[in-house]
Amino acid sequence: MSHSSRQSLTKSNRIVVKVGTSTIMYPNGSINLQRLEKLAFVLSDLKNQGKQVILVSSGAIGVGLARMNLTERPVTIPEQQAIAAIGQTELMNLYSQFFYHYGHQVGQVLLTKDVIDFPVSRENTANTFEQLLIKNVIPIVNENDTVSVEELDHLTRFGDNDTLSALVLEITDSDLLVLLSDIDGFYDKNPTHNEDALLFDTIQEITEDTYALANDAGSRFGTGGMTTKLSAAEQVLALKKQMVLANGEDPTVLFDILKGSHVGTLFTPLKKGDIL
Ligand code: ADP
Image (cartoon, rainbow, N blue to C red; front, side):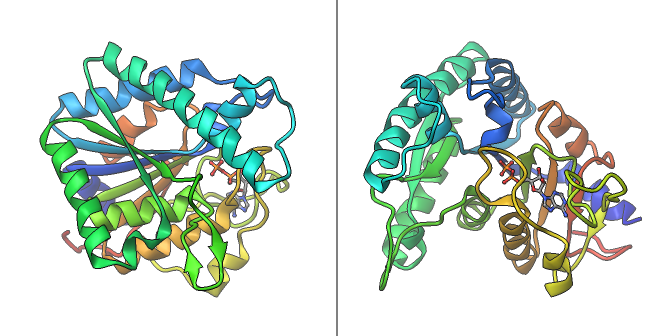
């Protein structure tokens, strides 16, 4: 169904792509270099096709742990922030090299949730993105873990990159958000625990019943699970924009999505016959 919604994806010009930690790390805690390189290749090729791409990447803590030869995530916040600082540097170093190999420059953008609370910081953020895109640079976004806090009257923490990427879509007025995860899309129940789970091709509305179908994160590193992905989709639909949730196992899935193929789950405000 919704042939027209899938077709409209072929016209997406400005795309935000988010990768979860489980996409860029092996379950054994090491960095999945093949995946990172393939992701850089696909995004670089989309750029060569004339599209504008913004990458939101999780994984700073995972990469930091690998770098420091740690198997367990530290318990204290300052220690986690330190690991994130180490990992973020290493992650950007890897992205920078892989994208450079394919002829593209990247720029790091670290955000906190309060950018939306202050019109001036929001505008500055929007301007930074715009300039990077004008200069043909691929922005790579993550939460600024060093300063993000969650306390009364001072909420600067997103806590998950799913809702952060929906905000990036809004600030940059992008056409499409693609969340790449360790799962093929959104199912009627958690497929990790239910073999008979059915994949949704299209979702046009998110209600409490939809949230009831999502439960706990399935991977060792995943933070948000399906709930934050649905929150992101809700934000995207409220903006009358579209989101696709797909498996990041093979990043070339992005080519298929942008061809209008029926892969992953499309969250769209479009009804059959609507034109975007
Ligand atoms: P990421 O690291 O990519 O952000 P997460 O591990 O946080 O991914 O979230 C994806 C996981 O959510 C899946 O692997 C799956 O175990 C779980 N999940 C829970 N409910 C559902 C559902 N209804 N459909 C698909 N996945 C679900």
